[in-house]
Image (cartoon, rainbow, N blue to C red):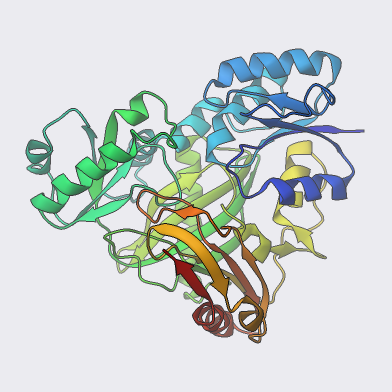
Length: 409
């Protein structure tokens, strides 16, 4: 039986979906997390504790484990585990992109340097040290601009600035964010931020799978809500895209060029792009699949999940079809409207009766302290819908959201 190592940080939404996929495939699953499990001593063959922030140490520990329990594949489920997974795979000779490529995708500054050198359309950018005087740093920036940390995801810490005063405020806010106890970044990522040109236009997300360096597009998502700042909270994703075919093809070409520029060759990628009259612009390319529970919008072939696709690829198993089901689908990541404690949620039963809505999953729990963007990264939950047209999917998501009430105090 094939044995698969899953790197599952305690903060991920995706543990259950990946475990379900592994069980569906009938593989032996080994779970690794950064926090020790109380059951690890009783199940040493299936539970590991790894320091994902130290990929080399993780690889050494897994190599020793694999000496008695050989592994067929390793999969990191999100940004926090991507470099560790690639390092482990390289050590064991398993399928993965090169460690340097995954590390470059993880660091926004390195990513920009690689893409710029290859001529991939990206915003103009500068790396700025957090020890610098923000007033002086702002003098060399063209407005509007976007400031962001080098290594966080889910739009955390991403802030638009239209003036010097807004630049200074954003600079200080990001610096404070990087000092929070719930933020873990490598030393350099905690010492710099990125200031880049604001690119107007529509934003899209491309979900893909790299096989031998070839990009296979699994889905292209429209983001119908305007993402203009000052913060960039993502809400609705709808697929298939409603953009003209030639625009979609241009997005695919630019994304493939970005992956090649970074040196990514194997596994899932998630790309964020802006599209305007000048064409597609790459904002991000991550060496992992879509975050949160959003993968539940995707089904392939005869009903295969995205997680099954990812595991099959890592194991080197055949994949009958990478074609997404034809029916339009979408998800709303329910935003946190303000900081406070969640006291109650009302209207879920009614919202789930909206035609087209398949499921509403609330991931925030009553009594939880909520932190909105840009300091926070979580959502209240997820609304999933399917319908005959992308427009109907979007309408169902918006209708369901209006029927939910969150009491926050």
